[in-house]
Length: 502
Image (cartoon, rainbow, N blue to C red; front, side, top):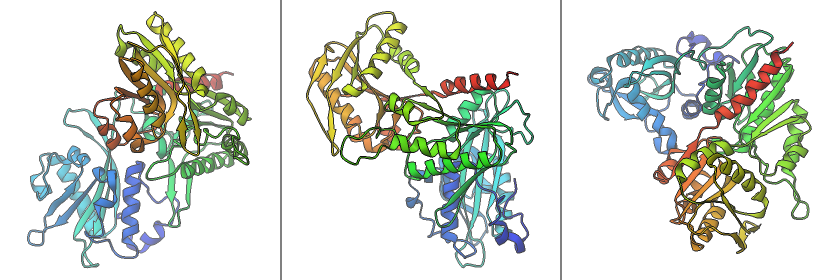
């Protein structure tokens, strides 16, 4: 892969401004590289003290820092993430990495790269394949950047690693097509949905096409395809959830601009796969002058030329279908949820509970799916809820959950307050066990105070939104995340088959 350090010094500053300047594919590496770039400024490199790993939060797990020992000039490990051990083996802080690393091949690779960075005082971005400790094939993307204490020489290294398994058979996420045939549908996955995109591509036995996502110093950005899309059908997978790095606004804007770029580049048809559709919760006016954001999002996609929107479990299906004038496909994870819950519940009596009146239809459809799968009756219940100015009220509860495994089903979990409230109601009415299930885990760690209440035995989510390690560990085995990539892949496969017809 092209690197800054391999560029002639006289052209380095110009190279950084060119459209084809290398950028990490992995989102976490992108943030680490941006963090280093910001701290560097106009200097040769930031200092070791500048790179405060406490500022990185969960990203620090993918980062490592090496410092050259003054006497021996050997790199000492100051900080290393879990990912670093895949390349070098287990190394404790203070170890002379290149001399004592258990995995000698990784050490030799790092030695060559570190010498390149040290000689040129510029970062490198590389990608290669290696073997994990269990001998499985892994794809490693690595950023290695200089640190300098005196502003003249390189005295340390700041780096980051991202790992991806290489699936058995054809490694779809490594292959790209520089001149795809006309009948082929091109598949892109933006960084916001990199993991789910990889999984969907694997099910389709289809490569993810290369693209560039670039951030500018003032917060602006651009995204563009790196293959010819003229007269091609294009599917774009993108996450529209917000997290600590990017808001829903950021990701929606990036996706819209990418759709526009594809259309300007001559794409015949652009289908957007948004597992979680942002701004779908405000679908009608409940107070004077309320915005109807579901419709506004539909108009934005229409204005940029999107031909089809594929999403999963929107808040209000009717509002979604009426808001978009392009083709829409709405998916659900009911069968995936039912299969898992049928196993968990065993022979227990089961009741499906809707946490509010608006979700009653959703709960009923799921109840029928679960009933068909297990071959015995499934009870139902309904709780009442009113929400105004963020305050939830309402005490009505209809249905019999005594002695049952109560499954509280909703489209998403934000703060988790509704789930905790209804779970307590189920307990008070004799439920033996309470499982809360939702397609989208929107709230993340903000929902933990409610989801860790003793009234809730288990939490079930789909992987439409990736969850942080802190969220997963805090639920301490009570959390199950189901993979729904095959559901999306099946819809895209059917569309690709239709495109191939004469």
